[in-house]
Length: 67
Image (tube, rainbow, N blue to C red):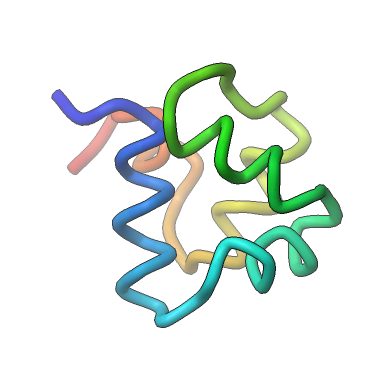
């Protein structure tokens, strides 16, 4: 099973977004995106909702509850 960080990275790359671009869309710093993608920490629920919207997937997909 992929981690949430891997899913975020893969979706970001599929959308052709850089870390700074996604960070701006979500309202966090580039470093936060890097930490999430490298599984240093995980986004809070409020950010998962925003990420899902920005990356055009469900929150369940990001959390690994559905494929």
